[in-house]
Image (cartoon, rainbow, N blue to C red):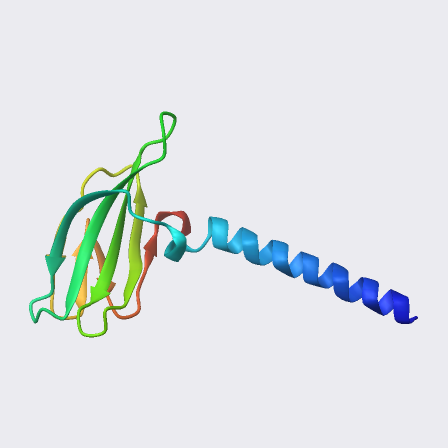
Length: 118
């Protein structure tokens, strides 16, 4: 019985690790790195800066745009926008906390856009 419990725990840990790895690899945009700098835009009050990058997946895929936001007061950065089949980012600030990137409106403090989750 004790051996069966150890085997069960081991299998459970392996499955948990695999599920977490799959999630990080395919569903979390926070692990994507920007490749080629496109542009940046600061919020009207200067607290946030959105930086856009062009990512190239290679010869068989289209370009993608990644945008990250930096809180200039804390220095923290996170990805907020990831879209496929794009090669430019049109960034318009609606107010101090809301930005419109390629017609997608995002609150920079909490929202993210990932084309895979449309």
